[in-house]
Length: 38
Image (cartoon, rainbow, N blue to C red):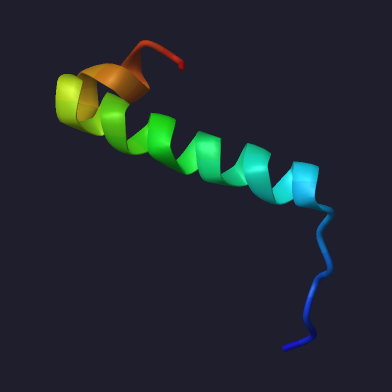
């Protein structure tokens, strides 16, 4: 598997995205969340 080089900004964005996803997963039932099209 080849390594993908990311800029610092991209890494920051991905980290934020993951954090947001975890927060959302805690706050909402995943079935409801995905059914809403988010």
